[in-house]
Image 1 (cartoon, helix red, strand yellow):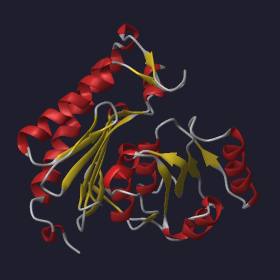
Image 2: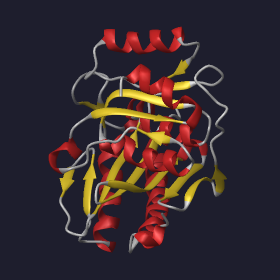
Image 3: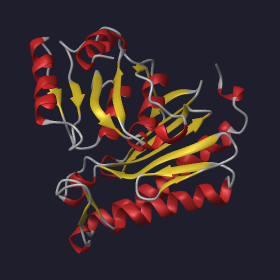
Image 4: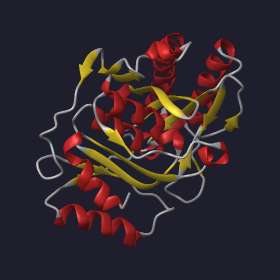
Length: 266
């Protein structure tokens, strides 16, 4: 399937890259003066938000609303605006707010696009690393313009797997994931940004990623990237209200699919 199967995809893909650069620059400016930010908590003390998240999301929403007023937009901070075009932008203005406010570089701007429920664009900007990951349906995936292609010889035993957790998941479940990975001869990392770890799967830095409960704005861009780099992902429910709820997220390079599906029971 090529990108011209979806009318209007090329223009939206180009806009997504432009907006990711703009949003990344704004977020980086806030990051450099993060000591001045008022940090608020959401669900618990580890779930934080600041004016940076809100301002970056507003910038992204405004750009897409101006260019494509009939498209829907779902963002972490301001929820879902329904559209009529069949396209829905799915945005996390700063994924990894906890690393962000604590001065760590593991955060990113994540911009995904759904067409009739399928991820067709994924752009992730990691400003502290000066990296942009970009993919569109049928066009492949790139990192700073270089084509990404996954190595099928990489498995959970000879590479590293990313995992994620939050207060929707019990400590026992997280411990079980870690135990299963280690028992299968694997190893794991968690950097505080699920979207960025999905980008790392697409780039071959991680062989897979698993989080038992994750939202669409954290994974849709990464899912498109992984697929276009030659990987696999577990489908996320995108119809109606399900799009705004959490679900298991699993993505993997070809050599890790079976092991991760077993560990995640999907």
